[in-house]
Structures are given as structure tokens and as C-alpha cells.
Image 1 (tube, rainbow, N blue to C red):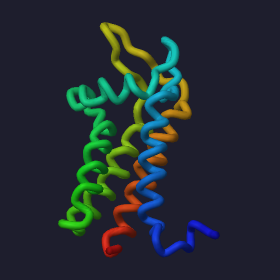
Image 2 (image 1 turned 180 degrees about the vertical axis):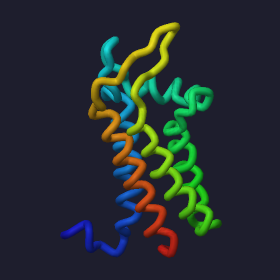
Image 3 (image 1 turned 90 degrees about the horizontal axis):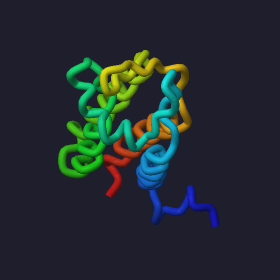
Image 4 (image 1 turned 30 degrees about the vertical axis):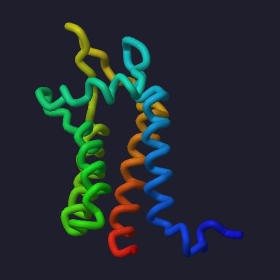
Length: 136
């Protein structure tokens, strides 16, 4: 039996589920390798909202994609807009060069697997929202 062609499990639902799994997995992986060591995904999730004051907005992609998923059946146009915005806002993280931390600056050397899992989760969930809007 092929799950991808099973009418009981639509592809957008699979994308949303897998996106959620990747998002959770990103929390326990290294998000950034810096000059001061590794930064875990859970730390970025817990403190990322503070990036607003530093013009680092990527963390807010989490809220945008959550709102898109919650609104996809009742407000499909808004949900689609929020899903696309989540991908764009999340992409802002590619521009990060440093992370401020307790009076010092951690310069980012490279992106960790946690970052890639997180961004892939945002993209997968956005696709799930976009293609799942008309599914009943």
C-alpha cells in the first residue's frame, strides 16, 4: 500500500505533520556554530523573540506559520499569505552574522543541522497550508 496515493491521508496533511516533526527535531540540534561554541535550537527558540530589538526577525516565522496552520480552513487567503510570509521572514536568518549574548557577540561561523531542520519545517508547513487550503 502506497501512503502517498492513499486518499485518506492527503499530501498536504503529510507535509504539515512532517514539518511539525522537523520543527520539534530542530530544537534539540545545533542551530549555529559560533566563535563561542554551539548554539542549540531550543536556546534560539527561547530567546529569538528578543531579536526584534536587533532587527533580526526570523524567529517570528514560527508565529506566522502557526497562525497560517490555525487559519487555513477558516481564512484561506490570510493563511496562504502568512505561510508565504513565514518562509520569507524565516529566510532573514541567512543574513545573520552574529548573535548578541550577555555583553559579548558570538560571530556565526556556519549554520548547524538544527537551523536547516527548522527552515525545512517552515517550508514544508507552508506547502502544507498552500496546497491543503481546498482539501476537505
